[in-house]
Amino acid sequence: MKFAITSKGDAKSNALMHKIRNYLTDFKLAYDDSEPDIVISVGGDGTLLYAFHRYSGRLDKTAFVGVHTGHLGFYADWTPDEIEKLVIAIARTPYQIIEYPLLEAIIRYQHDGKETRYLALNESTVKSVDGTLVMDVEIRGEHFERFRGDGLCVSTPSGSTAYNKALGGAILHPSIRALQLAEMASINNRVFRTVGSPLILPAHHTCMLKPVNRLDFLVTIDHLTILHKDVKSIQYRVASEKIRFARFRPFPFWKRVHDSFVSN
Ligand code: NAP
Image 1 (spheres, rainbow, N blue to C red):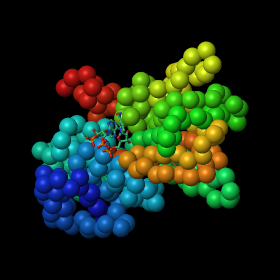
Image 2 (image 1 turned 180 degrees about the horizontal axis):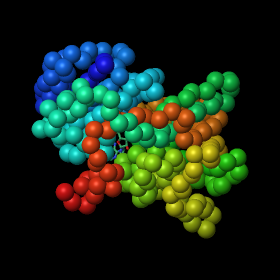
Image 3 (image 1 turned 120 degrees about the horizontal axis):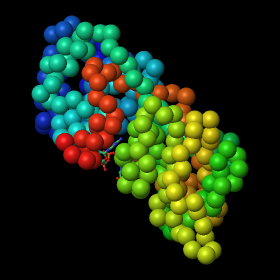
Image 4 (image 1 turned 30 degrees about the vertical axis):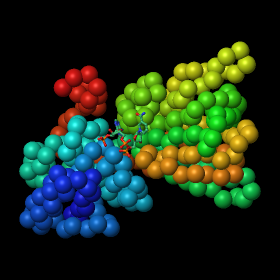
């Protein structure tokens, strides 16, 4: 079996990365940066986002596992003092795989037939470059509302504990194949009206955003922010691809939510 390790880049994460690499090499596992069967991310949830995007071209062949060197993460739930246990478990393959849904974003442009497709593990957000974001929101091909406000956030179930949560969105269990649309400071008065609540769409429903006046937008895909010009539409749905996590012990999602946000 081939493995790769991504590190957050700080001294503690780098030292742990070298330790894990040496242990796994002692177990006769091969280090392979380009085609790993398992990717070990050392740092935090942000580090796992980087690892996901680095290997998003081979998701069906790669499993991820996260070690945190700071606070408990949703994707990074192993502690540095559990490393020996983790290494032995990895070396003793096969291991159990659990899959989480991903978000697909397709951006189409006004003047050519080109489109750009992205996969997000946490979420995609849309903001105006300057001024209020004005977007027509269509759900399943039907006009739903005209949104005016700071922005819109479309998240995956596992991303629901990140930006979405700060926007008052619900926390969704990652076994639910769905996407969540949350508002950022919508303008609501006698003239302008939006639903005001986060919406949860099933996997067979598409959410399409269509510009009303300005055509340039700042679109985020997890930690990446990209300026898109002359946008015709931004289409969101649950992706056909999934992220695969290597599971070596039970750590229920609701326990992670409790330990991260309630108390530990
Ligand atoms: P960052 O601004 O350095 O860190 C954002 C924080 O979000 C970190 O504490 C990170 O945890 C945490 N996080 C990432 N994924 C999470 C998840 N699925 N559940 C709970 N917490 C999560 O940015 P970054 O490290 O590059 O991460 C990008 C993410 O930041 C975006 O995907 C977005 O979700 C989030 N974000 C949140 C807000 C907000 O809450 N107002 C605003 C902008 C962006 P670690 O410390 O373990 O890495």
